[in-house]
Amino acid sequence: RDPLEALTDGAAPGVGFLTGWTRDEYRLWLVPGGLVERVDRLGAVALAGAMARCHCGGEVPRGYRALLPDAGTAELVGQLVTDHLLRVPLHRLADGRQDPSYVYEFAWPSRRPGMGACHALELGFVFDSGDEPDARKLAGEGAPQDLADAMHGAWVRFVTDGSPGWERWDAHHPVQVYGDGDPHVEHGPRDRELALWTTPAPEDPAPAPPPELRSVVRRLRRVGALRRD
Image (cartoon, rainbow, N blue to C red; front, top):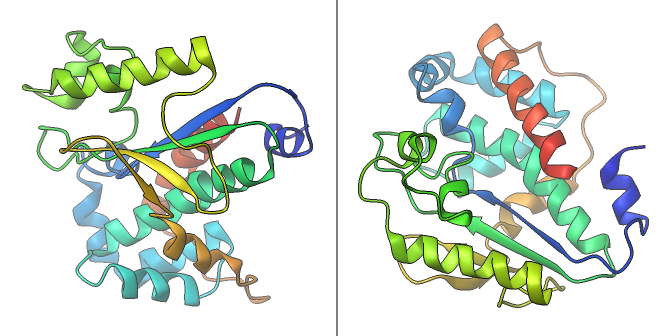
């Protein structure tokens, strides 16, 4: 059975839930291989491919364009696919559970050029393992220890006490944001984007995506399955 459906239907009663995402998940796959420039060049074709893979109508990318007027095509596609595969399901899961849920967004940008707050970057902070080679490959030099102390401490509190130290999820959608400044709670920081997904998909499918987009979406889909487990 799909883990998301099982959990929203009440599986694992009495178990708290801590989940989240990074601000720029998609950059781990688009930046190192130079796909940002390639997707930007594809323009409308790339957006059409994302629409096909995410089963959404044109109002969704138009909405993202309105919210991110300065973004290139790669960023629009990356955020759109990330929301479809990760943030929308995780919001649904947090909304559907009776037991406490806690949600975070990791927004500290890597010191590696162009990587931003990419997928898995937060793990070196969560486990306070910033000196490990894999963590340094993602974060670069000068990752802040105080951020690692804050995140690691929150995860330890969640494991030992059942709460990481910020508001539990409710109708106001509190999200603990870890970025350049002090960790803080924002209410509904992704609500405007996720509201775009409430419109049903059109009956006529969008054109098939180009190979570059198929590869990126397949990778993000696997990540989405792991995050929902």
